[in-house]
Image 1 (tube, rainbow, N blue to C red):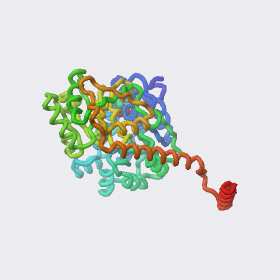
Image 2 (spheres, protein in one colour):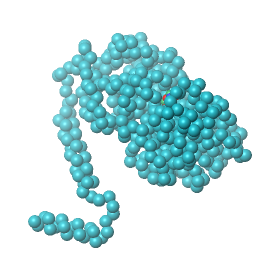
Image 3 (tube, helix red, strand yellow):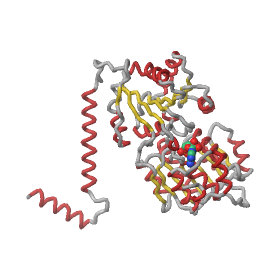
Image 4 (cartoon, rainbow, N blue to C red):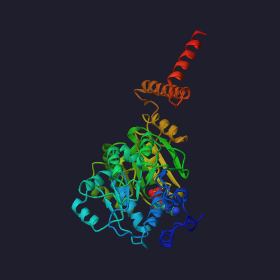
Length: 429
Ligand code: AMP
């Protein structure tokens, strides 16, 4: 299928042609006609599937006729400053042949300057929920908003933006279109979707919490104290041009930079303690190829759009299995191939099982010659961990059984009585 067949207008078609997009991705094929038809959408799509264009292209088409007023017509909410910038850049490149005004409202920039620009008239704002609310308190009206997008909704909720979104939603006009994109299908997202979506069309481009097929995933077993050495060895011996490396904590990210620098590797580091300006500068340096290794914690694992990133390395597995999906989603974007390598020590052998359960895939475990784990190193708490895992499995089994036995429909008093009576009879029998 071609982009023309999706009904996109010429200014957009020539812009995407210039970007080298030949065919729409699955999410684009499914979402573009629905957005043009003004339907609400609930889409589970991972980063890297082309989801930004899936909402941005039809939105731009909807805005092609300018209106008399100067008010905001589209609000795109995103969890982080980095993702907002990425969306903004994408929209600018799609709208080169159109007269649509877009701006970013994120923290770290002067509120007054943003207010002045808003007054001059803006069609699309891309905002983090907190900063948007600040502007609303300062007089920004959402009365003319036609479309609201929630990008990476699960991440926004995980980051504690639920209250902000609940405050923003009632300020929109009654008739508006909402497009919700989420990488995972969590309970929190489902709850929010019920509140903010009206008769949404569901789009599920990948199975729940799956990783993209084109990503080759492998785990290398290694002792904790040899991880940095193995990482440097892999980068050097396999001649990785650029790698994105994830650590679980800020402290281990800081320690790793020191270790890798000793091996002469040029590194950048992005985590929550770095200022926004610093994070952005580091990202730009990585994108421009000035650094070979970018070390990041999970806060940075979303919203980073780096063209053609072939390797992602989990120096430590994330504490939340869902974050694994987001981390490895940094590679294998838009159908390209990629490799996700996890370095796992004896403490992470159980964590990887949770990830495998989530993604429904077995990640092969291998050993790199010269880095074989010391068989004498055992988890001190191994029995405790086994017991915990068993307990977890049993409770999950019980819950599944319980859910099977209980009807989801509320029962009438008469039905409850009948069930109780039946139970009693069975007991006696
Ligand atoms: P996203 O999932 O929106 O973060 O997009 C991932 C990457 O795929 C971005 O670099 C886009 O520029 C690129 N992309 C989006 N749609 C297409 C397409 N139809 N063909 C090729 N690349 C695309």
